[in-house]
Image (cartoon, rainbow, N blue to C red; front, side, top):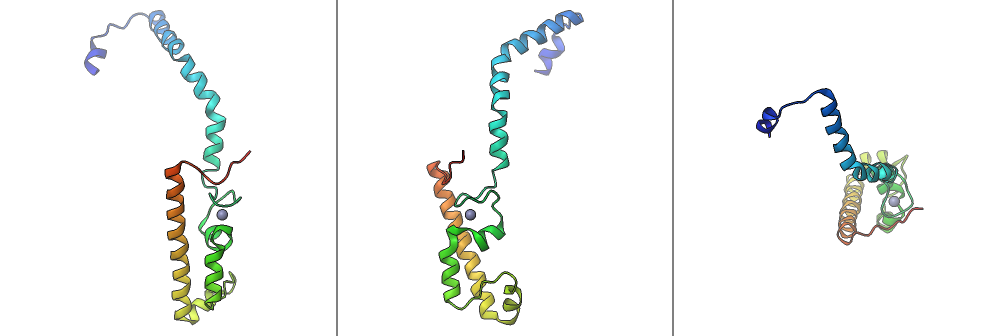
Length: 133
Ligand SMILES: [Zn+2]
């Protein structure tokens, strides 16, 4: 390609301009479609981090662990096992008791494993939970 460019005889400015214009005309439909798809693409990017399982717009580790309704059964199970899932006191609880630390670690692992499995299922099927309007 570099060879072809090197051999090309560059004409005066007007000819180059015509060449560029023709190129844009030939690509016009492509650019037109691309530009009109931008808002849609932008919206997808903005909400790329949305939770796939509930209405939360921003999926964060905190959301997954503490509030996402999808994983409530796992939290309930941990509570039933004696873990007090209180965000403001969990730190102290974990420092004081190794068994609670292990239980909390187990909860995080269970939720993350389940989340990965369910997200992969959805990616494969091409279907996501939410249809936003
Ligand atoms: Zn969620």
